[in-house]
Image 1: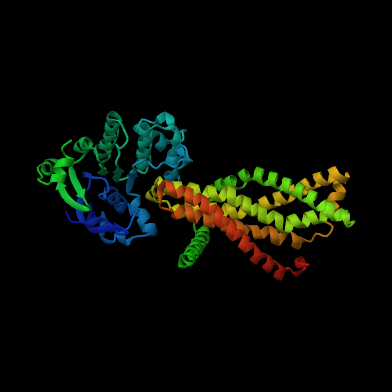
Image 2 (image 1 turned 135 degrees about the vertical axis):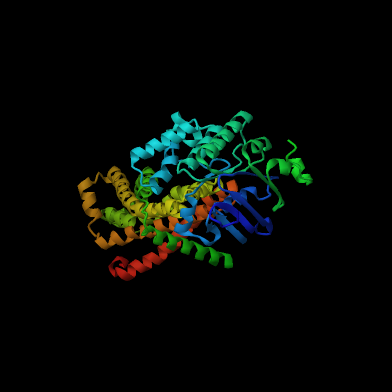
Length: 246
Length: 253
């Protein structure tokens, strides 16, 4: 497997800084199609930035970012939209459009990016909302939903276009353990039933152990561990051992 | 000083980008309708109430002087010319800058802070076209319409004030209001408010859309939207009046 082979996702020598602060330093990694990768690390080590770079919401200072056959650092406009269509993004605080109902949040991408008739759009929304356990809440505004419901609604919106690659930024943050494991279950179901490639940024080591085929640990913008969980657990790096000690 | 020039350039480019995107598909008609309701319908009560009160107060102030000089019959004419030429356009501009400008700045900066704009981009939707263009269009279209409402509510306020003092009939008040009135007193000043609307929409959207300071940026964007929009409207008004005098010399008399 090589970066840019058309079937994998990867960073190649990616660096990113904000002003004087360098967030990522020469980071390279690859993810196979259908694989689940969890990115761990202390706060401020560039985990969320990594996801935003993959989604092209940020541009790197150096390096290449491959989504299957496309280097997204070289794309813009319609080409970038085409690549983003393959991906779904669950934001940390769900980022639901607060003036739209749950139904409208999900209908927006469907009505704008597909040629589905209204009836089919309604069917898709009903099916996706049912799959995340929010079937009876589609007329609610985001402000009427609890934290866990908002996360599930954010996941429903990320899934509504049936992405092949799902990015999740701290899906369990701010949630109790039971709700967090329900979100993890939903993510796992995407991986197993829809063969989604999962890339999850998390602080929740317990969740990472359940979800991940591979772990990636970032510290001070550098990649300090990359491999299957058992392999990373044997790392002698103090930061890695500390992170996985939970 | 270089920062002021830089900001002016950035806001100008932002406005030009909005104009260019307006004519490129997909056309955001649903969002434009939504924003027209937000900017237009929801500003209407404020604009009408303000116009009515201003009209009544203006008549109260001018009546004594005009009666002293035996020119009481000119009160409706002065009222109409004052409102249609200047009070209506400028006051509507300032009211909308306060109500709508701050709203646009706050909403967009909050959307930025809560990653809603990133979420729109992540869904392969052009956030600029979806959020910015409809707001600028709504401000540009709504301002002239709101100005007409403020002009006529000002006349209504003036009439009530005059009727209380002299029992002037509504028919006579209206005929005197428009006795010296030309279309050139109506179209150019009313249409110049479309420029005000474009300025309010562009500045407010720019400040909200480009902020990246989290919750602190929300308050800052809202405040700066009002201050900057109001200031630029007043300055541009001077230039536009000179321009209108040049194109329609009879209105300068």
